[in-house]
Amino acid sequence: MNKTPVFSGIEYLPRGQASDKICPGCIVLEGGAFRGVYTSGVLDALMEADINMECTVGVSAGALNGMNYVSGQIGRSARINLQFRRDPRYVGIHAYRSNRGIIGFNFVLGEYDKQDPLDLKALGRDHRRLVAVATNCLTGQPEYFEKGRCGDILKAIQASASMPYVSRPVTVDGIPCLDGGCSLNIPYRWALEQGFEKIVVVRTRPASFRKKESGRASRMARRFYKSSPALAQAIAGSDARYNIECDELEKLREQGRVYVISPSSSTSVSRLEKDMEKLGEFYYLGLSDGQSHLDSLREYLES
Image (cartoon, rainbow, N blue to C red; front, side, top):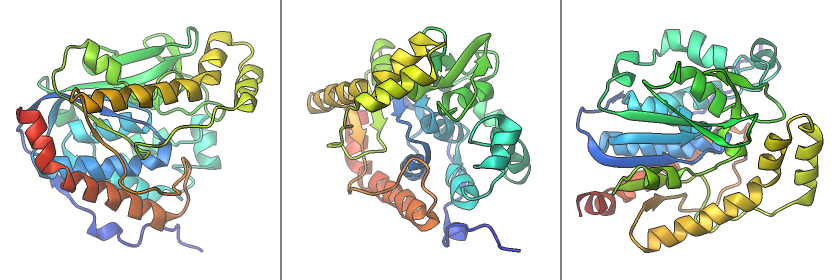
C-alpha cells in the first residue's frame, strides 16, 4: 500500500506555545487556499518573536491560520497542510463525500484534532479577538463572524474557507455562507473602520501581483449560481475587486498606515497545490520573510 506523500522536512517544523505578550493592533490575513502555507510561516516567525496581535481577521485560509495564531500553537497550521495535503480525508473525494466540499473539515476539526489538539482554552481567551470573514450567499456581501459573538467560531471558519463551485454553503447563525474570498480578499478596510492604529497585513501573493480580469470567469459564476444572483455578482466581480484592494493597500503602505508582509519572491504555488516540496518551500519562505521583517515591524508597532 502506497504511503501518502508528506513534506520531507515535516519533523523539523517549529513547535511550541506562543507567549502571553499581546501587541496592540490588528493583523489581516489574506486567503489563497494552500498558498496559505506562506502565512503559516510568517505567523510562526511572529509567534516565536512574541508578536501576538490583539486582533486577527482572516479570509478563507487566512481564517484557518488565524485560528492557530490566536491559540498560540507554533507550527500547527503548517503541520496540518504539509502532512495531510495529499490525504483524501483532508482533500479529495473522501472529503467531499463526508463534507460536501473539497476540504475535509470533519477531519481537520475532528480526527486530526485528536492527535494535535487545538488549544480551545487559549483560543477562547477574551483578550484576543478573532474574526472570520465569510460571504453571505443571499446578499453577496461579506459577513464578519467574531469569536465570542457568533454562535460557533469554528463553523464560521469552515464557512470562510468553503470554496465556491466545489463546496456547499455552510450555515452560520442562520446565514448560508461560502468562502470569504467570493466578496472580499484582504479585509484591511474592516481593520481601519474598527479604528486600529497599527495594522499588519500578510499577503499570499507578491506585492506586484494583479489578477487578469476574465469575462469567462464572470459568465461561469452567473451560470453556476443563477439561482443566487447576488452571490453570482460578487464572484463575477471578484478579480476586479481584488486588484482595487491591492492598489489601495499599496497606497496605505506607502503612507505608513499599514505594514505589509508579502512573498519576497515569485512562486508557482497554486491554490490547490499538490507538490509537497513546493508547499514546504513556500512555508519556509514565509518563515524567512517573517524573520527578516521583525526589526522593521517592531519599529512600526512601537512608533
